[in-house]
Length: 103
Image (cartoon, rainbow, N blue to C red; front, side, top):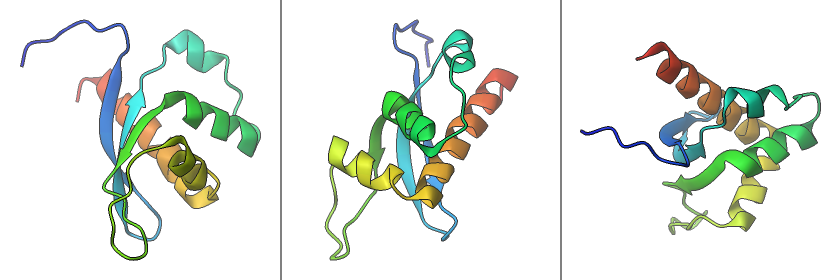
């Protein structure tokens, strides 16, 4: 695949939850400078960060098995849960670190 320089860098990864389930997430890749400005000391800061970087969520179903399309409401529902928020943060940083290491 040819590398194309893009204004908005993004990546997709599988997010593993602590319950053993998973879903897909597409994240915006922030620059080092943008990341340095973020101080992860409160849940509100974590939520604001995820609002900034989550571009899409996929492979999510409702209780009746229906597919749920990405929306700001879905994102808010997901980041309101500490376990899902932590899973998304872990997926962002783990995948970013692999990319920086060249893996």
